[in-house]
Image 1 (tube, rainbow, N blue to C red):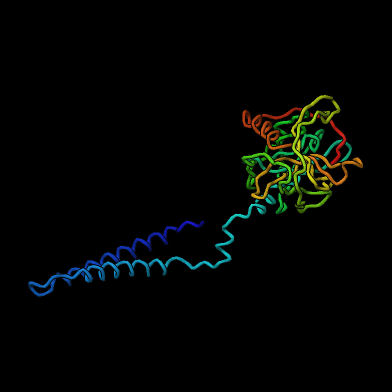
Image 2 (cartoon, helix red, strand yellow):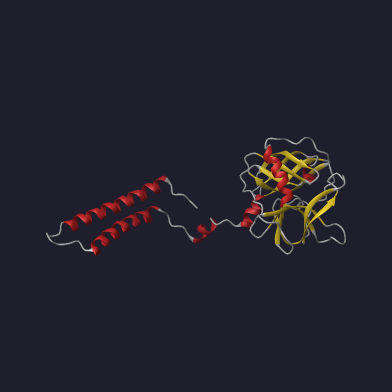
Length: 285
């Protein structure tokens, strides 16, 4: 919603005062009736209506009319916010230039996968509008395959977590930047399963338990770290891999919002922290 500027407010006040003056003048005229004549209730009502009409006309004169399109634009579209919040993550190292996806979880904090930024330097995040911002690796969790980047002066809306976990058959969409694309892509999907798995971390170290979503989506390389959002535009997870076996072909995998919450809380404890150097990994997506 827009807020009236100073001139508009002054105009409203002037209109109200004018209305009050008009009402007062009419009242004085009514009081000037011949002795013994009583002011009728309708006279008082007319005085009030005249005062209100003057004030209303003054407000109409100073407040510009807004069309339906402008009013509609002020109503936030959850998917549009999810699209704007999804960023491309780019860096150098490990034999070349690598990229993935991420999304804003706090003001100035971008979540992505640990395997997306592992071993990289000169990390940047690119917004949908094409602006590039240098990023600092603040939290690096190889076990969960999640990381948080600190980005200064990032004017991008953050995504809020869903208040309830995603369940099988829930409709979701996965946002990210596939390949070398500079435009975000949205992949419609559905949750197949939410479960805890025991797997290796990004460096192949065994026996790491993670809460994971299995989604019915063919995730493209570069979409790792992108948000999985519900129909209300709230994130329920972060994509991290696509199915590569015959049995998992056409499926994607995401870490749940509960896993994301752990690293966001770690960042909140010390937002100025900087993670140390990280080793390269083979990036599946």
